[in-house]
Image (tube, rainbow, N blue to C red; front, side, top):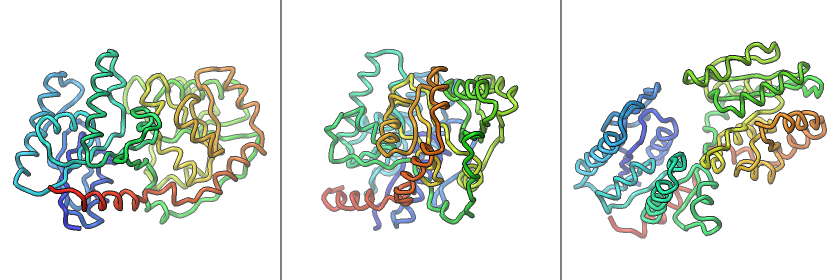
Length: 369
């Protein structure tokens, strides 16, 4: 395939965007990428091209200046490629909005967060939801990192031009040395959280767990990335059964991490709709490493976990519910979840997107540029 794909990335250094660019290149597409510097610590670039900076946005950038930067950044990309036959790949609602304002060319739209649901004004949420749906409708193909996002927009009336590419594990995880799990001891459980340390729900679960169950252990694998989160988790260090292991390499260290825990905690804060409809990569780590998962009730993730029978759903801000949950855990219950996980094809937890590229090829054969 010799079609050229021009990517417009909302944040240079975002691993998901880099992964997408690399995958297109590996499948024979010509790729070129542009993006905004948002102050991420990572300076990683795709393997076969460099993401060229088209603007700088940080936390101190005012709202109007932010919009202006995105407008002119997208404008620069369109002008630079206007004489070429290309398909654009646009990450994020803000980029898509300004792309549609300035161009009627074919594009793929990818949404990984319902960013507008964080707004305080219901009117603003409704307005940007209208723009979001318009971007999906006008796109050649819209990619979502969660089936829940499609449900949020359209309920059960899913448009034909939508496709889910979940945050699954890279294929390289298959090359890592396997680690045997520690034997399950129901009297001395190990529950772990894997990732950036944030959310009141995570801290509260750990606090209740450590206060009520000194015979069990809680493990944190990861770090905080800002001062408020550090202050949230710092008090937990007083518990002798709460262990902070610090940073780890993804995915290289995952076999070792998951070998040490019986359950993985993924009770993200559900105050915002984005979290309620998201599908975190933890579910795929849980499946791959045969570890039952604990998630927040009332979420799309909880529905999926309970449907598959691979974990538990609780309100992690309710002390009584946490206590009742831990009290109800039995060796039989946990092993039933593990057995359900074993029934799932491991390939479903890996980043294999043949279906997406087949769908894209079929669409490209039907359109003119």
